[in-house]
Length: 209
Image 1 (cartoon, helix red, strand yellow):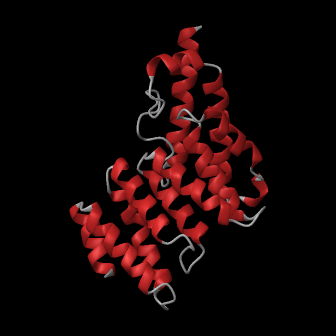
Image 2 (cartoon, helix red, strand yellow; image 1 turned 135 degrees about the horizontal axis):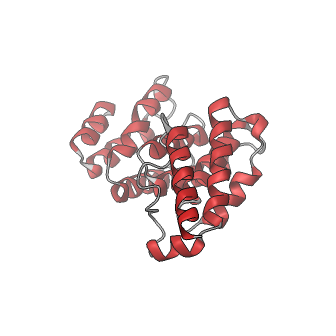
C-alpha cells in the first residue's frame, strides 16, 4: 500500500495517492513501520502541482482528524519544509498552519512551524499575519539554519513593507511575488534564495525612489 502511494505520486495521480495514503494511515496507524512510512510519504505530497497538493493534504487531514501515530506537527513541519523547497507557498502555509495547534507551546517544533508559515505568508496576501508569526518566534529555540532563515525572513518582510504599492500593482491575486518568483526559501538552498529575494526587494525599492 505504501508502494502504491509512492508510485501514484511518481506518475502524478493524486486520487490514487490520496486513497492509498488514507487507507494505509487508517489501517496501520500503530504499525511499527509507521514512522518510516510517514517519512517516505512526506516528500510525495509536494510532487503534485500545488492545487492538487493542497487538495490531497486537505483530504488526508480531514480523513484522519485524530492525527497520525507519529506526532502530526512533526509530519506537517516536514511537509511545510519540503513545500518551501519547491516554492509552493500555499502548501507550506497550509501544512504549517494545520500543524501549529498540535505543537506544544514554546517547543522547537512550534517555532519551526511558525517560521515556515511566516516565511510563506510574507510573500502572499497574508503579509501581516506572516510578520506577526515571525516576530513571535524565539530564535534561541531554532537550529542554526532556521535561525538564519528567520533573520533573513524578517529583513525581507521589512523591505516588503516599504513597498506595498509596488507589490499590489504587480500581483493582484497576492499568491505570487514577481521579485521572488517561485524559488522563495527553498529548503536546501533557502538562505541563498531568501537573500536573493531580499536583494531583489532592495534593488526594486531603490529603483522606485
